[in-house]
Image 1 (cartoon, rainbow, N blue to C red):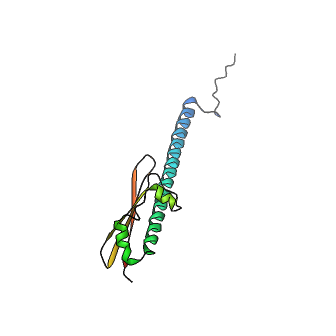
Image 2 (tube, rainbow, N blue to C red; image 1 turned 30 degrees about the vertical axis):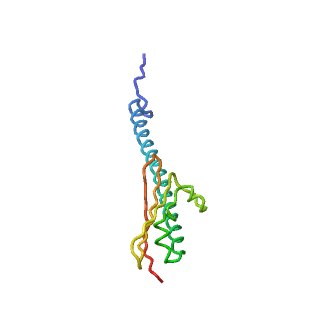
Image 3 (tube, helix red, strand yellow; image 1 turned 120 degrees about the vertical axis):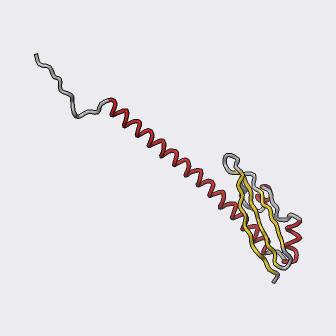
Length: 136
């Protein structure tokens, strides 16, 4: 009687296959997590760019105004906009976006435009631009 007691050296054992599948699953999970984080970071940066563009738009509106009336208009809230006022200017507002302006000084106006909005997950975000405008 002949017994074939040779193991086939060309195949993997069950433990080797389980180890390979475990390593593959952990690797794919890590890659998927990194990809999701990249998408979220991309959206946050897109929203920041839009907010800065809106702040620049308001600063240009202020610069195109007569110097003597800038301080009065800012104090009256002419450039303090909510989402509906932003949309009425032809801009696409962010989620719960608000634009607030502040001014200090008399002959040299220090103007600050602050944009606030809610990011995904309803996290409050804000950014601001500041400039000086002198009487011509």
